[in-house]
Image 1 (cartoon, rainbow over the protein chains, first blue to last red):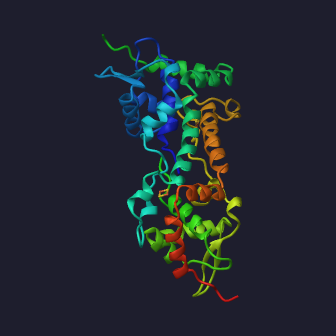
Image 2 (image 1 turned 30 degrees about the vertical axis):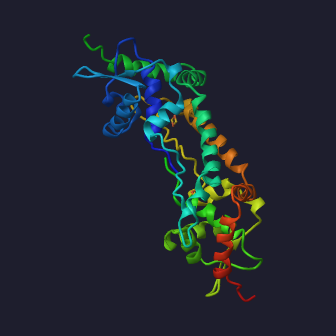
Length: 166
Length: 166
Ligand code: FES
Ligand code: FES
């Protein structure tokens, strides 16, 4: 089981976009450059975040991305589900109903207990992710920083953020 | 994020092997037949379970698989880690250290807060899986059964279990 590398890129991109001045945007290629990743790969994930309302897209040659809502309204779970899709990691193929001498359907009205137990664990995972907002994470990152990390981000933004005409 | 289909097959196989008479074994092809899955695919997972000590393998033409320890000593987490490997689903690529104008190493002694938050959620997932033993699951499955499911399993075992010479 492996999460997409896009998750790390998406979360870091959101923390970066949270530093933008009001009404400014950042292009996909700037976000990719800052994080040292492929623009085309990152673009796919930025589009997924836009579709989920986590980012807003400003089209056009001076366009780019900004947050679609405030950091306190974006949880880690929102980002993981936007990138990975809503399906649970465990997917029951109903193998209890396969094989020789099948039993009548009435035996299988309730979900398989194995499926239930696996999904219960995923609920615990999702609850933990839902409890962490991007505002929490940004505060965590700031606490671990004497100012150098923030300054590097701000210097990059000063150079690369765009103010689209409105 | 998707778990291997082998997880469902492995857990169901363990519940099946828990029904074996003492010293009896079941072949990979019988386990595959009972669950309506491919023998070669299942075999790979049975070997991973053996390597983890969850199953014991009896070699030879009358050989096969039985439990390597009692159901109360096998958790869902044991099975998931045997099949999926120990690596966490989230893998930090240290993208905070990439890109232009890199900062000195001293900024990155502590793990990234994003990595920490993602791993904390996986700990919650694993703790939940660790808290469910195969003995619990077998009891759950029995509670949801008026006897028909157990009888089908026993009839199959009567026909297919092997008693290797010792
Ligand atoms: S039938 Fe799918 S987990 Fe039991
Ligand atoms: S650098 Fe990997 S999660 Fe932050």
